[in-house]
Image (tube, rainbow, N blue to C red; front, side, top):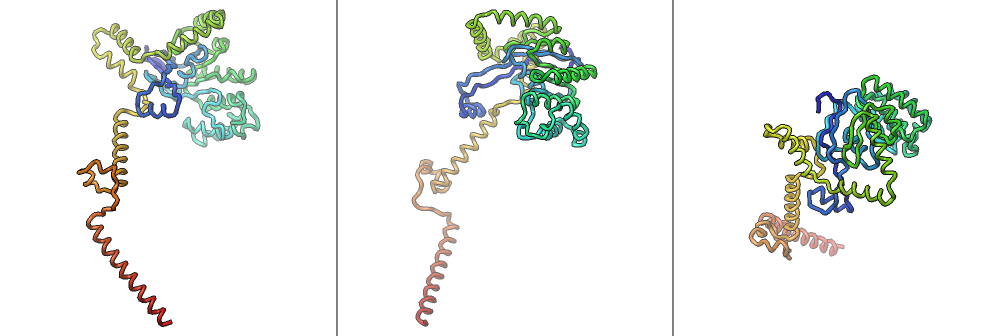
Length: 385
C-alpha cells in the first residue's frame, strides 16, 4: 500500500457477540467466558482511497458495507486492524446522527456543533441548509414525525454544508424523489470538482456507475474485488444473475453457508496467515510478527474490561463484602482475625471498644441521676399543689 491516500483500511475486522440475555452481556464485559456465539461482520478488509476519489461500496445485504463506512467515520470501533483517515468525515445515512425528540432546526445546530462549527458559523449556514433540505415548516417539528425521505433530505443537507474533507453516503439517496436526487448528484459533482473524497454505499449500480471512479465489492464480510467501476460492476451483475437462477432451497443453503463462515472465522488463524505472508515477502525482517500484532491491535479500543481492571474490581468487591460481614457480625476486626469462623456467627451482645464503653457508662450514670432528680422535683411540685 502507498502513502498517497486519504483513507487507509488494513486488515480490519468487526466482531459482534450474539447475546441472548443481559446477563451474557455483563459476563462478557467482565471478560468471563460464556458460550455466546460470535458473528464477524468484517473478516480482514484492506483498501485505500486516494484524495479526490469517489469509491463505491457494493454487496448484498449483510455483507458489511455499512459496517466499514461506520468504522471509517468513527461511529463504531473496529475489532482488529488499522484505520487511518486524513481529514474530517461526515456520514449521510437515513436518520444518522439525528435526535428524534429534537426539531429539524435543533438537529442542524446539534450536528453542526458536533462537527466543530461555532454558533456564528451555524447561523450563517442555517438558511442554506433549510433551503436545500426543502422540508418546509417541518424543520421546526420533531424529527420523530418525519418520513424516511425527509430524514434523508435533512441529513444530506447538513452533511454537505458543513464542508467535510470526506463525505460518506450510505444509502441516503435511495429514499428521495427524483428532484432531490438530482440536487444531491449536482452537489456530489461539486464536491468532486473541489477534490473532496467520497465513499458511496448503494445497491443502485446505475448510481454507482455514474458517480464513482472505483468500486469495492464486499461479499459476506470479505473484500471480493476492488478496481475500475465498470469492471467490478460487471462481475457483480454476473454474481447477482447467478444467484437469481438458484432455486429457493439452494439460495437459502448458499446464504446459510456464508453466514456460518462468518460465525466460524478465527481471528488468531487470520493473524497467523497474515504474518506468514508478510514474512515470506520480507524474509530478513525478524520483527514481522510484532509489526503485524501492532497493526492488528495497536489502534483498537477494547470493548471489554482489561484483565487488570477485572482483578482490581474483584478485589474491591471481595473487600467490601468482607467488611460488610464484619460489621453485621458485631465482632471487632481483631476477633475476626483470631477466629475467622465467627464472621458468620453474629454476636448477641454488642461489644464496644474500651474507651467508648467507659464514656458510655459515664453518660448512662449521668442520665440516671438526671432522671432521678427530675422525678423528685415532680413529686415535690405535686405535694405543694
